[in-house]
Image (cartoon, rainbow, N blue to C red; front, side, top):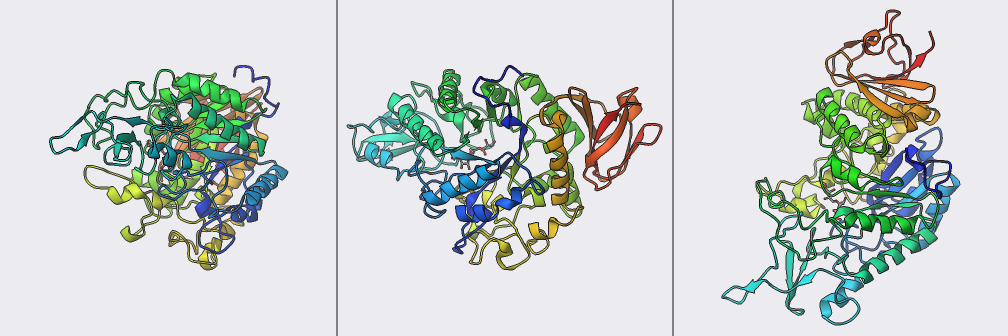
Length: 554
Ligand code: TEU
């Protein structure tokens, strides 16, 4: 790694696991059916040293929001949504986390606001005044014969439908990448940037340890707002080459300016959410202390070949000097137990749990900062949501020309216990509970070393003691066995070998063939007693087994 910035503490936050909390769904303290900040405070022991020792919690947006995009449409970035609690609750949460050595990361939604944000209300009302140019307003490109205004260019919304919305009062269109209720901010207006940095400083002053930046590579648009070239694709969004509405050439300078604000305080974390698929772009936007999601692992089928290709692409793109992230799920994508198992036609028990455990070793064993979405630690699965209960707006628009994954499926309440409301709420949950909540929950999995939780706990505990796993370099090896992936992690004298089987069958690995002259001893894995190599260096992996071995002197 390049030398850490002077501001960085000796402890490197990139070594730790980040746990993503979707606040509406984590724990409901007041019994209104929606999760809240006091609910999170109630459950901080979940992150204790003998449970899930993590570095930080990332809170999906906690700000006041009309809720059209469930918090990603923000009407005031500086305070807490009364639905989730009060500012005092937030301060208590930060203090409670800090008391346990846990950092708090906020989700900054700076690409757009809610259409109920005071900035937008002022901007919409008049072409004069301080907020007139806070959003992407443009005149029509022309008029139809019947007097209908024509949009400024061909840009569309990622959430379906046109990207431009006509406001008769102002006599102009505004642009929105997402919902019509999420107008795009005009980052080329210096007053917008200044207002955002003020807001960022305000949260830093309140003790926040870092930020996840929502769709950060969409902030800047082409200054001339040119139309995107049209290409082939399976949705209106995919039928454009997004040359002019994302990834502008001057965007990297904007990240530098943002990071400079954050660097006014030592040791703060920042993570960019890449609103594009290319791993190479994620690497391009990564900086020493600013990491970026790349989606290659999330896009891969659960096969050794697909994971090998994604891992190699990541390592090639990031190189030894940049630090990647490892994320297999989040609030926008299928839960990993569901997606990975379904990708190879094994979407049932016991296969899903077995794959969820092997995935835990992948997440915690690859080079990069691991991100763990709430519920993954107990192997939660996607929940079937009837159409009249869908709470994800674009899902209601889905159709043949607009394929959309209903994100309600992966946002169901955390399953804490087999009691009423799954221990999540004493009221009626805002989104239905998983039908497996009585059997799959924290209370039942914590004492069970053979559960998905048992696996996470074991591997996390080992990771805490292993510099090679947290920080070491990585080399992928050919395992010599079909469907088995192998890689090493090394730091100083510590050398680890990670083996992951991607099939529900036994596989034998010839360790002597992989790394001649080295003896290996198993340290931890999906099984309580990980499989051990024979004297001849042959290791028989159980179905779906993943194991981490350490080299020992002969
Ligand atoms: O998501 C942006 C988004 O849509 C991507 O995550 C997308 O799913 C991915 O690039 C597909 O490859 C963010 C938030 O995570 C999401 O919840 C919000 O709805 C959206 O921005 C708008 O704020």
